[in-house]
Length: 393
Image (cartoon, rainbow, N blue to C red):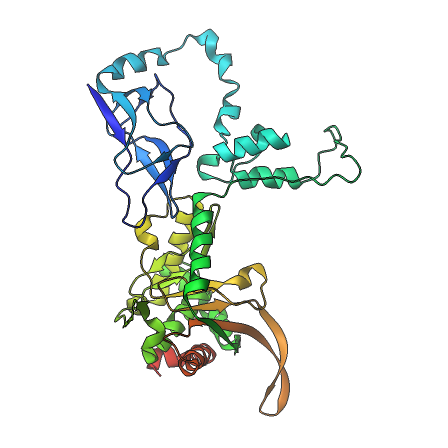
């Protein structure tokens, strides 16, 4: 019986995707639910599993093609399973042929293979950072930027050479670029700044981090405190948690906080839904889970949908100050930065404290400066006196 392998249903906000690389060739046996190919959309990478066991008899859509929901990608003969499995018992003398398998394991994505051919990089010598060890375009770029090994022949560039390289954007990068540009064009973005003394949070974390990890099975970080502080502030100033819909302001009676996370494919912002009902441990575990899913390319469209407020932490990369861009349709975003020891005045005395600059970008169409400033002050106060979070002050 011949059955079709089709593109899975996409979300309303995703109309099409790009086929990455077939994991099976025509004539090879496939198992039920075995992943046949990945589809890159502008939000996530979707896996396409085999609906039944059998033999892949036809590939209809090739690597790199643009596809839409319910489109036929390939065909499987479910009656040919036994015939496909028969050749598996190869004669003993054929065993040495397995030696090149290492090269096959180091599969390169189409964009990576193209760039490798242009730059002369050997993809088989690279350690892929993608899912299942795949070599990504970024791996090739990094390898091309490194000095050649001592054993490699030197490549002399002509004097005055000005090399260039043109690489197409991924769907995710293209979509991010479109959304950020639209955000700046459609929102009246303004940013207010403040600074927070991180010593109370750092002391609290140092005191309880070992007990916390032993009790909850997850490390105690800083992001959970910022999420809790942000939710407390948003409760006081609901307009900062609102969004614009035409000529209406939509006030959200829930707190879905987006957390910006870097991934091999680019920046993603998964959502902590009903963050006001989550414990510190719940938040830390959810962030760990999302980070792992982002690294493995397992983030689902549902993980990225919605959100009423976002937090981004440029401090992990050393940023001291930035003006984050609002993630539509949200109306505000909090930017965290690097914590540095600085001289500050307390009670008339100059002391050294671990200080962080905070930035709150907001849509001035619905949020006045007063609400924005007071929201940031409320976040600062909660972080400098964590007891406020327990007492709802």
